[in-house]
Image (cartoon, rainbow over all chains, first blue to last red; front, side):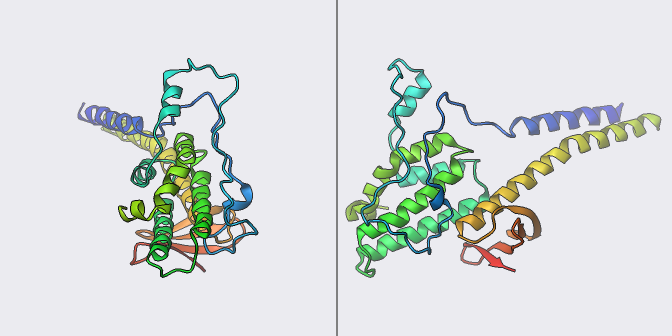
Length: 181
Length: 84
């Protein structure tokens, strides 16, 4: 009888443990509107920049509103459209929380974000000879890396990052805003 | 005694049933994690096919293309992939 109690308890523990595992992110009707240029996914931070004009802007597309979409969409999709752009702190929090990427990947990404911020710091302190337009390239590359990691596992966050791309850049490109980071 | 033996057998079956898949999922997640790290660091690999844990935050990853990397967290808190 004692053993049966033990089994019952074990079952309960297993079931409790299993309930929190593998929660799939909420599915939306539309496919994730994230386009990543395949040639850039594997590029390195140290890699030589390809022949791009310095002011070349995004290669990931901002989600395009579907022509047939009615304004009376579901509440959840309406929320997504009106969600405010992420700032760097919010982005950091969301990346920490997402289950789409592993711990080592998160730490590597954090290292690369810190490296990029160091480049901006050096630029604003006059220690670097780069221009702001040149700093846009590593910024875009890093964002593409993040998007390529998230687009399958957490498409919602990937979409939010795409829509926040310019907002985040505006913080980095403004010395006053950057100083508050 | 017979009851106890049955209970243990049942427990063993349940453990195999639940722990087996959960460990496989963990392994798959680690392979994916290592693949992403090596790609982020811009090293040739393709896909990590096996990982040997050497210690806390220290792994040897074997890639599909035959490359081996030691992936670890150094003292500065940086993830490093060293070709073996």
